[in-house]
Image: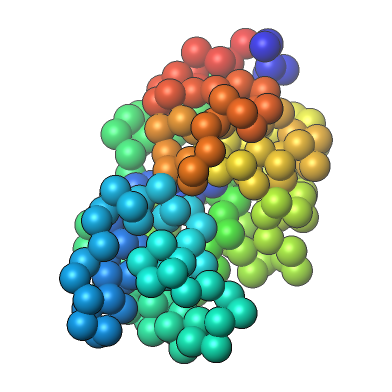
Length: 218
């Protein structure tokens, strides 16, 4: 479908702008190593990287929130990840070129992620995203995605109406959050995508690589 021209494009972080799965998976396999287990295959951990500790601990150890062991594992997972979160993480290919093109066209860009500011504030500048027009983390507002509050906060910080922003993400909850915020949405099919097909998310558009976003611009 044809999307209205954006004044700003907001992006999810993990799996959309940055390939952070290697370091997240390593933290999950650290827990397995501590338990005397062999590493879980990367192709099992990568799809759930956008779900953070919940998804990775679940995939690596089949332990989920509500299990009495979960909270202690989560603390160990997050501490290990924080200590090594830029070992292998990098921007996806062509993301720097995409962001430069947006800036050249006068389109603001920002980040809206469920990643806690404890990690986002350190990670973004270290991997080349410190010049974002705004960064809204998972603990910036009382509600994380799929609630619209983080997206609405980003639009407020930019001084741009939500309807004049696009939201781009690689998880169903990103599309749900964008829809709830009345923002046009783009599913980032190059990302992690969980265990569902982006074609089923009812996003306003689908992009298979970052530079395809430029083709979607009216």
